[in-house]
Length: 406
Image (cartoon, helix red, strand yellow):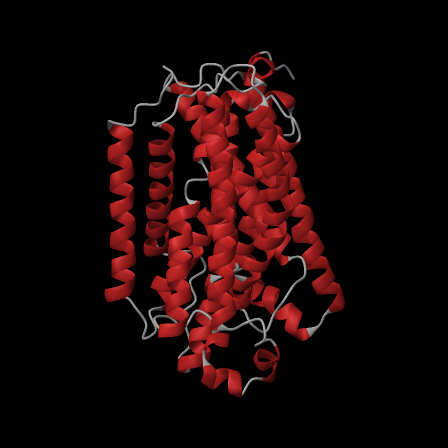
């Protein structure tokens, strides 16, 4: 089978998942909402930035492979290309959140409230960067820039497939665009992470936070990618993908899990050692109010992939690799959760004066909203995959990928 057929049970399951997400968000908006609807908006922000980040990392990985003259990934390249499809709907949702800053739809960011800004010297000092105009226009311009690169690389891929075998001109152009995209993605993603996520906790900052979050996105992307690739292979697709390719993806999951842990430790250790109040408050809240979740994240994101994939054979054993990937994916979503939701709740308390109820883990509606976004993400990925041939027959590195050995 050279083209994925998107129908049957998997389509029904994803529709059900999206309905679960819509119902969960509706209940949070209309039934269990606080006066600022913070649960609804924080869930939208959490899940949209998470899956938008996964799409960005898929495009980043594709560009890195193309720039590096890599060949081993070619047999599953189509799935990697499909993984960046969420950039467009994710961009639309982020622009709606930006419009919401102007119109008062939500109160995710304290710096967007003029009454608070006037009486807070720290927020006032950051107002040159943290304001509604910078948020909206930086989001609009930089996301459009990502979409332009995605469109150009996709267009060159289509031209290459429609062209003559042995004509490498399109691939050379693709490499030039990919090489430019890598630093663009690196720097612009840092700026948007500061705006979208870190500024929720406006009095706190970390110079490592952007790279830490981007690394988390990358590991989550690799985890979900492994799950989907093995699943599709079990269905009879991607027959050219061998255990050697899966083994290399397992090495990526192992290596970047260690890299994420390094960034986590580096950020935590420096803040702990300096013991500056406005910095330590970030981790103090997590460890005092969410201790189980805090250490669960460390276990899922470091201990599980490190011990689970340390042995070489484990990276070629599908059930072990999928188990590790599932747990790691959950762990990185929880990491996004603990780095966003508690601070939105603190902001609500600051505005309304009403203390928020502490939940040591996500509630059923928060999990439901994540399921909805995950289902939408996978639906778009699989629908995109169903429109193209699995094997890029005119890719100059196809033969190298077919005969790939570790």
